[in-house]
Amino acid sequence: MEARGVRREVDRLLCAIQLLTRLPTPHVAELAPDWMARSAKYFPLVGQGVGAACAGAWLLGARLWIAPLAALLAIAAGAAVTGAFHEDGLADTADGLGGGRTREQRLAIMKDSRIGVYALLAVGFCVAARVLALASLPLARGAWALIAVHGGGRLAAVAVMTRQPYAGDPAAAKLTPGPDRVRWAELAFAGLTCLWPLFFLGVTPSLVGCTLGAVAATWLALTAQRQIGGYTGDVLGACEQLFETAFLLGVAAVAGCGR
Image (cartoon, rainbow, N blue to C red):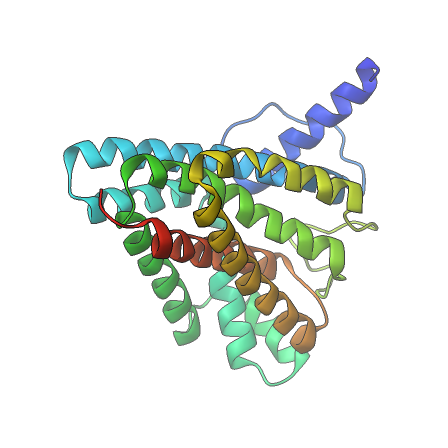
C-alpha cells in the first residue's frame, strides 16, 4: 500500500478512536463524506482497547476489593473511557422505542435529553447484569471476556450499519452517516479482528456468549427497523450495550464457577 493509502487508513482509525472514546488523538485535517462508514471496520479494534482498559481495572480492583466492587470499577472504567457514549444511546433508544407511538414521536423522544423510566430501567438492568456476570468469573477469564465483549459489541453496531438504512434526519444528526453503507469486506475485516480474544476465553464460553449477544443485538435492530425504519446513532449504542450484557451473561452461565 502506498504512503498515501497508509495515511488514509491511519486517519480512519483515528476517526474511529475520536468517535468511540474520549481519548486524545492527533487532529485529522480532512474528512471525506463517507468517513464514518470507512472507519467502521476499526470499531471492534477500538472496542478491544476500551476492553483492555476495563480488564486492567478489573485485575487491579480484584487485588484490593471483593469481586462485585472490582467488576463495578471495570464497567465504570469503560464508561469513563467512552464518555458513556453507548449507555446514552441505550437510554435514548429505550425511551424512544418504549414511549413513542409513531415513528416521528419515537425519533423526537430519542433526541430529547430528558431521561424517562424506560431509560432508567434499561441502563440500570444492563449495568447490574454486567457487573454481576463479570463478578462471577475467574480473574483471567473475566479479563479476556472484557476485551472480547467490547470488540464484539462494536462489531454488532457495524453489522447493523451494513444491513440497515439510516432512519434519522441527517441534517439534524450530530454525526452524519454519510452517503454510503459499510461494505461487506469491511464488515469481514471487523469480524476477523474480534476473533483473537475468543481463543483465550475458550470455545464454549465464546460460542454461548457470541450467540446470546448476537440474538440480543439482532432483536433490537429488527425492532428499530420495524418501529423507525432503520438505525440511528442511539440504536447503534443500544445494540452494543445489549450485546455486551447478553455476552457476559452467556459466558457467566458456562464459565462462572469459582474464582
